[in-house]
Amino acid sequence: MANFSIQEIQGQDHALRYVEKYLQNTNRIPPLLIFYGPDGVGKWSLAERFSFHLLCLNSTGCGLCPSCKAFLSNSHPDYIVFPSDSKIAIGEEKEPSEFTIRWLIAKRINFQPHLSQFRIVLFPDASLINNEAETALLKSLEEAPKHTKFIFIVNNLSKLKQTIISRGICVPFYYLKKSLLKEVALNKGLYLEEFFGGSLNPYDIPGEVIQLSKEMVETHIHDSIALLQLENWLKMYKDTHPEWKEDFNYTTFLDLVGLILIYYYSQNNYDQNIPKINCVFEFKQGLIKNIANLEPYLLSKLFYQLCNLT
Figure 1 (cartoon, rainbow, N blue to C red):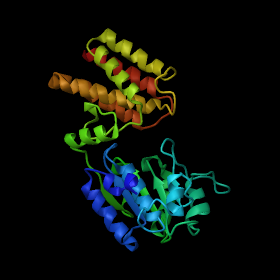
Figure 2 (figure 1 turned 90 degrees about the vertical axis):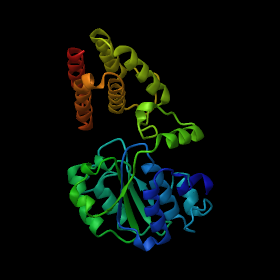
Figure 3 (figure 1 turned 45 degrees about the vertical axis):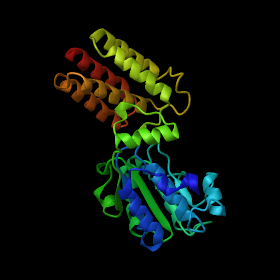
Figure 4 (figure 1 turned 60 degrees about the vertical axis):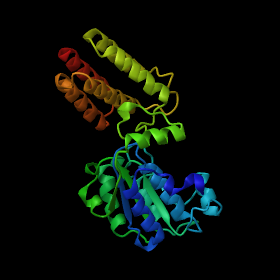
C-alpha cells in the first residue's frame, strides 16, 4: 500500500535493514524489538508500518485483507498499543485494569491471535513502564509465545532496565540530515524549526503554539524584568492555552520552551551563556521525573537563576 510503505521512512537505513530482514523471514523476529533514538526521527512511524506488514494476511501490507482493513480503521484485535501519556502500572492481582501489565498477561498474550498470525504489543514510550511493571514483564519477554512480539520505543536506552535490554534486539535510530529534514517537511507539509535539530517536530504540539513560544522567548530573554514576565506567562499558560485546545500537556510544553531557551542562548555569546544553558538543562531534567505539581517550583528556580545570571 503506497501510503503506508516501510520505504516511506527516510534517513534510517540501519533500522530499515533490520525491519526488512525480519519481514523476509518472520521466524527470526525476536520476542522484543527496542527502537531507540531521538524523538521525531521515525521510530513510531516505522514501528507502525512494520506492524501493519507483519499482521497482513498476505504478508505484503496489501491494504485489502481483513487484517489490513482492521489495522487502518484502528480496530485490529491483535495490535495492542499502550498509552503514551501516562505511567504503565503492574495492575491489581484480581481483575486488573485495561492496559496494565497483569491485564496484558492474563487477558491477551497467552491466547492465540484473533485475526492474524501474530499479535503485536507496542509501547510508544517504554520509559513509562514503572519499575514493578517492568519486572513483571521479564518472564513474559523470556517465555513469550511465538505469536506475540513486543516493540518498545524509547529515546534513550538508559531509561530501561538492563535486564529488559538484554532480552531484546536494539534497533538504533539517528538524527536526520538538515537537507532531508527540509525535503520531508516540505513534501508532507510539516512544521519545521531550526531548534528541532536533526528531528522532525519532536513534540506533539500544534505549530501555532511552537511559533508563539518562540516569539515569547525571543522577546523576553534579554533582561531580568522581561524574563519575569515570561515566567508569569508560562505559569498562566497551564490554565489558559487557547492555541492548544486538545490533548494539552503542560510538561511537554515546558520542555519545548526549555529547548527554545537553549537554542537562543547557544546562538549568541555561547561561552558567556554556558551557565544559563546548564540551568535550563537542569530544569529539563527535573521535568523528566514526572512528579505531580513540581512544575511551579522548577519554573521559579529556573527564572531566579536566569535573572541572577543576566
